[in-house]
Length: 121
Image 1: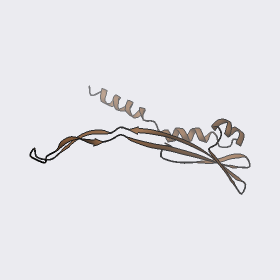
Image 2: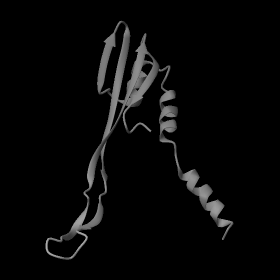
Image 3: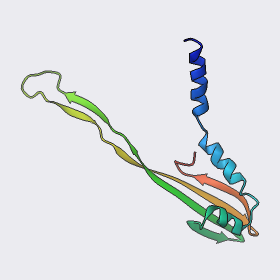
Image 4: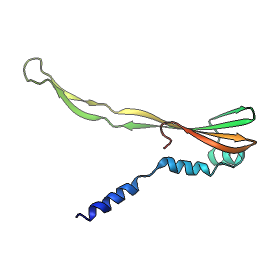
């Protein structure tokens, strides 16, 4: 039984994936591509802006997750008159998660990117 614990711990740690590192590795492959190839790979950008010969293409990913609530019980510390016992807890909540990836292009070539949001990694 003692031998199984380290094996289970190793399996649990290997199940943890660093999503930010995966996303960055995927985006790193796009640096150096031309604008047309970037659009082919990522699709039509959500926003575009150009200033002083530098172009910025932004891609927005957004999703809504439901955080489950919890059930609790509240009440007064006594059973006498005025005492109240009933259900309590935290209701489920909808949370909006976003990640905006902005590519910087000069001379039509992707030079860098930035990530912003609470769902980028």
